[in-house]
Length: 389
View 1 (cartoon, one colour):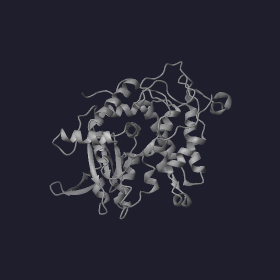
View 2 (cartoon, helix red, strand yellow):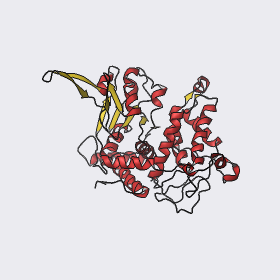
View 3 (cartoon, rainbow, N blue to C red):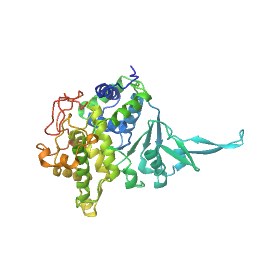
View 4 (tube, rainbow, N blue to C red):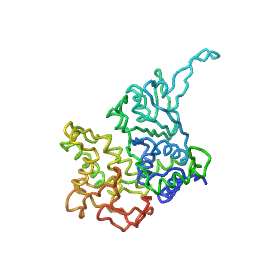
């Protein structure tokens, strides 16, 4: 069944997103932690970088994500001889019309899989920069708008680095989320074989749950999610801690702060809330921040990972208390008062990270927003849900 509307409320939107997740799980064995990160990027109008070894289902996940969302999907295999025009398209001479016409490239789709993006030279990689940031491409001085919604899902292989081109920091910074799928459990791999035994095609596929217009509605709903001043300051403080860490040469950028803000709002929608709590930030901190950190030479030699710097920043920054019925910052909340010790409740240390670089939520996540008179004292949403959705 296709949901023609994401719903008028965040509770309806959360249920729609849960249906999308369940549809994806019909074809791909993926942890819900990863799907939460990927869908947060989609609802935040961002892009996803999947880094993992071959054969873990990166391509399948990207394709069934597009199918479940009812979006047009294209795949671009990045190779050393790929040219920018092979991605964006080019002007082709039409003999019948006696004029040049623009022939759109494969980037003109809703979900674009940039497979093994680091195998193309920097000039070709840069063809994606304008598309990812502005939703458009410029060819021979003419600007062409890309479809809306537009999501780039790029993959790269952490092994076999010979002949590859490391993504520039400026391009990595344009990905809202970087995550990895990891190897499935024994039960997961057994399920893969069971599913393969029940179909006659090599690649699985799914029916759409929503339509293109519904995805835009969900994205618009995320734009209306409230983020209180203490939570905004929490995001900023974490980012500044990554910059102050002596192991980092470059920390999370101001653009990165905005992407974390947007992803946290999307995470709130997935949880069925119209406001962000610190737990939304903590859950996505590693996925949204680690790839923006550039390690110092000493840290690289010592084997430090960027995710370690983000986790340590989470441990050092106090978690603010947030009440859903507190006045919004736009209604005249005094920022200094919001940060004062007298205005805040007890704080708790940041949550520990789960395996494979994913962050374990510090508490249960509810798909229903808490009652207006409920107050969280430790940055965790009320209610319970074992599946993150």
